[in-house]
Length: 121
Image (cartoon, rainbow, N blue to C red; front, side):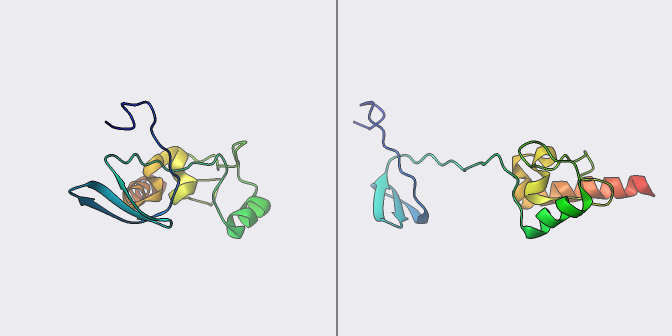
């Protein structure tokens, strides 16, 4: 009988150090020790605030590029944020999508930027 069939699933919020499939199921080594599961559902967190650093804060303060109320930049399809700024990674999420933070997101951003540069010539 599983926790789902009894209506009593558990919830854990932990940093996983190591994972392995075993005969008993999925073994996770977390900061609190070893745990075994028959199923693991993973989720990532999203905060409705702009990611960034002091550099991003300085850019906003000095150049005044447009931002949404949540703080994310208002970026064009060509990833331009204002007249002289282009973004990739987390700052490009609203155009590139949720993959903006990983390698495929970087590749997609590169394609958009290359196309935009080609249109400027």
